[in-house]
Image 1 (cartoon, rainbow, N blue to C red):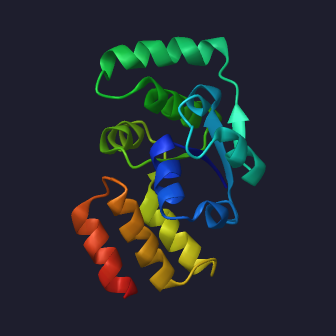
Image 2 (cartoon, helix red, strand yellow):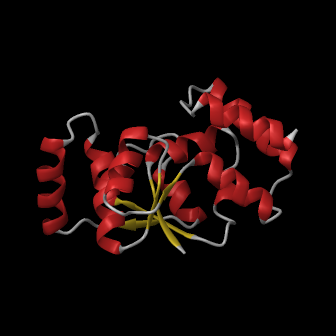
Length: 159
């Protein structure tokens, strides 16, 4: 399956030192070219080397982004671009932003986040449960805004 990655998810996995494991999942990951400007740490070039596909946003997507952005001012331009790409490609969206998740869900776009990806890494035996918990702690320490109740449930199941 193919997924559009939002920058927040990339930042989480960089903070958790799990970018390599992320790209070993049996998924294809892509992101809008607009978003690569935001990616400095880790740099977009590293992510492309790991397997991230950068999708050029055609003019009609840009028009759609601008139109949607006016109605969803709480979302960043890059968030809306990730949503538009996922919807137009007919693929899922990976994000931690609750407002972006709500828009995706309302629009029928499959959406998941960091905790779901950590579960997939464990299921595919790319990381141990204890490594997932340690990475999650590192993500939270770096400022990730994961839902506290879900984080606690995840930790209880994996410790």
